[in-house]
Structures are given as structure tokens and as C-alpha cells.
Length: 311
Image (cartoon, rainbow, N blue to C red; front, side, top):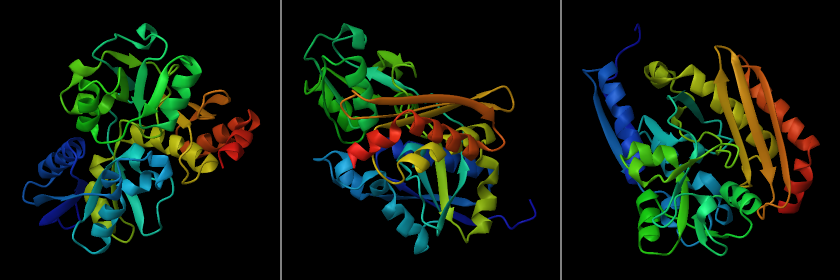
């Protein structure tokens, strides 16, 4: 590389076990790329980690998980911030940019229970915990006889609440359980047809200051073009329909062959009674354009009316 190799790289990260795993993963990749560099972690607690008694949608949305990390970028105490892509707001402020999106882990949702093997086994009134309006809407639509209740906290906290009997089952991202070496907790992986994933689920993103072209250059080898194309398409759907709002919305893209994306999406009412669904296939060269087309198709299926009711 023609540019100067950094002497020191500081990674801002949340301090949950999963966030630290992701940051350590990125640190390992950078140390292999730049063995002479000193790569350090700066652990931080965000507002999203602190507010655990209310649903995320009611206290400010996903941006609560990244603001403190962005402040560290602005004041120079960190060079990069590592995020779960599903926690990154659809609209970043101009001062920030996503310099790399790494290869995706399994992006699907996982059914976790100590009592039941799958959702079909659960009797009427059984309690399912989730922090996600997206999961809640799909659960209500497919299993209207189950009781769906809010579940906040990091992954370990959610598992502890399940184990102490607060819930009969919980729904988590399969990627987090896999990354933390807990695949045995997964009783069933939910197919996308049953629980369409969140935008960016399973992918790790690296955020930098827009002005730091040098830092973006360091990170370029960590970008996975196929994953980035899928996530960019998904984010375009959400940005076009929901902006920064927390709504029951899912979007999921997969690469087919070398150049085709298959993109699916939905918008729903939280009770699962109203759904707008659509899917498209298109060229991966312009994933945002495909996302905008899918958003337009969802509008024609009634997404505007559903979103208006949520507002």
C-alpha cells in the first residue's frame, strides 16, 4: 500500500460481550494486515445500553447505540467504531461514513427456549420475548395465540431472563449466538419466510469520520463487496420508507450468482394484522436503486397507509 501504515488504531466499541467479540474480531483482522501497528479497544457504555425498562422504539431508536462511539470519533479518542449493522441508523450524519462492511454471519432469527423445540410447539398464551417490532409483528401474524412481550438487554441478559423463567421462549439473532459460541442455545433457525431478518442483520460495519480518508484506506481490505451490496440494498428500503423511525419493517437481500440480488421486504402494523410485502431481483451493481424500487412496490401494497397509522 502506498499510504503510510498507522502506528496506532483505536477502536470504539460498546462493552457488551457480543460488541466486544466484534471489536476483537476487527482488531485481529487489522493486526494481521498491519502487524507493526498497535490496535487498541476503547470500551464505552451507550444510552441504548443504559435504558432497559422501555422498548427501544419509545426511547429514540437504534441511534442510542452509537452516539457515544461517534463522539469518540469526533474528539479523536478513537479512529474507528465497530457496530452491528442492524444497530446503525439508516441516516448517518454527514460527519460520518461506513468505511467497510465485513462478511455476513447467518442473518436469520433464532428460536431459543428451554421448554419447546419450535414455535409450532408452543401452546396458546405461551410467552415469547423480543425487543423488535419487526419480530413482534411477524409473531402476531403467524402465531396470533401467543403472548408477545418486550425483552430488553444485551444477549446475556436476555438469556438469563429466559433461564429464570420470565419467558417461555425468546427470539434472537442467530449471528450473535454463533459468534459467542452458543449454537447449542438455538432450538430452531427461523426461515426468512417466517421471520424476515432486520436490515443489516448478521453484518459488522465499521464507521469512520468522513474526512478521514486515511482511515478509510486502512479499512478497505476489510470490506466484503457481496455483503456490502446486500446491506446497502436493505438500508435503502428502510431509509426510503421509515427514515430514522422504529417501525415493523424487514428487508433481506441475498446474492444470486455473481451479479444478481434477490431482495425481499415488508412493512406491517405491530399487531400483525396489516402487512405489505414485496420482492424483486436486480443487478447488484446499484443496490440502492433496487432498494428504492422495492420501497416503491411496498408503497403500492399499502405501506404508506400502515406507516401513517403508526405515526
